[in-house]
Length: 130
Image (cartoon, rainbow, N blue to C red; front, side, top):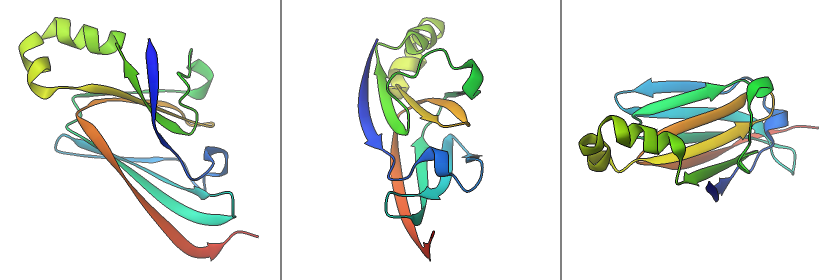
């Protein structure tokens, strides 16, 4: 399977101020992260996955392969998971045009989304970490 890097976090997941927050509304999911960047600025990153039909979370100690997704969103091309979903219901699968996105966060584990797409909102806090 081939992975394509789509987005690199501007913060280090090893510096997260709290556990990632996951919110779900309708068919959309948001992953919220607050952490420190390379200039010691506190940032809030919101990753909004749209039209999520499936999602998975694997604990850090049970993640078998990272797919180059450490502190990055990658799209897994030719994903076995997507093939499995297509085999279950090909008509619906073709309608939704899903992609397989993965992000691995230090200590939090791997988050996977079968979704149409995503967008990222970066917010910088005023406070500097010393």
